[in-house]
Image 1 (cartoon, rainbow, N blue to C red):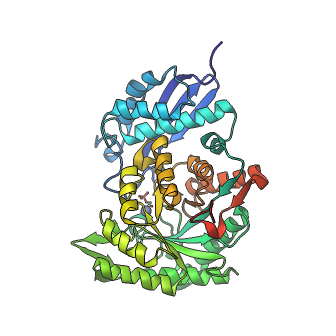
Image 2 (cartoon, helix red, strand yellow; image 1 turned 60 degrees about the vertical axis):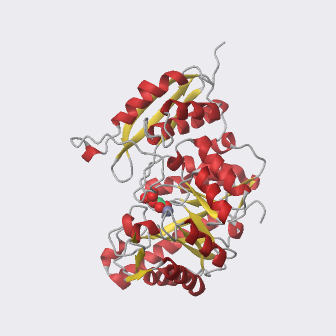
Length: 430
Ligand code: PGA
Ligand code: ZN
């Protein structure tokens, strides 16, 4: 009798991500079905992230090929996995980490390792004939996340002068995911008209995550245009829609100063700036407000605004349990941005989320600016019932694929799911 869960073959391909850069697709075959994992890729990456292995061969894709990582999957990783049970995610991830043998997955590549790790999980779900979220975590009741829709793109994701990388709307004042998403989408379309009126036709060009990339120079212009669009769309700011940003501040930090809105600010001045923005606008979530090694400034800002406002660590924590613990110890931030490819295995990513949640930190499951059509993170956000997902504007298939998967899950779960809504920070305890 053959075991349907037994891994029989592991295969990888070099495919393309949403920016047209090479990335990996990994397939894990079992007797009970095939699992698939596609690997995302960041642009404003944190310096402490696990290492994405690129070929560096300038004759192909300007050195960005991933054929070495593909070969690492097929020549080094595949063999030790053959015959293993695909439900044993933790054991398999442990094996991947030990074959690599480095602390940052630089030998085989975090991209090679993650592709396998995700494909093992989707193979197991397939074999069990269960939706992925249920395989990842079996629960009676799930929480559907508030979408953080990144509707204005700046910095490294756009060609404008905005220092802040992402301006989001979070539709919180709705009873279910569909209504919330609809509100976000309607605001997105009105914003397009508003931007064209204010800045000309080129303002509707979009950035890497599907949000508009208007020729603005100051953050206030973005906040004002979004606020106006919320009202024009017939929604109530704060009650129904709150604002969020990802400053990605490491990208505008040099020589101890932050260059934002034409000013060179110290971290204390930048903290004042955020404080003012939170007073003037319904801004309830700030990601990476300071550079990626400045735990102290994160802690100071969290102390100052953290009761009301979510302070999210992305490049600060890089989804790494050790760095998250360091943050918890001093109260740096009060939420984790969870990106599976920053740490490189599913098991470690879930550990990171659990560590954050058990220490009263919020958790936002997140895409990367370079994405694929893979919808794994939609299921992950539901499995964790974390209450928030950041997966771009409601435009371009690499982004809408995740929203569409959440729509499907909404219908599938019916009354076995509730929408996180305004308790997005602590969806399980309210
Ligand atoms: P990245 O951006 O994927 O380019 O790193 C996303 C983010 O900073 O949250
Ligand atoms: Zn970020």
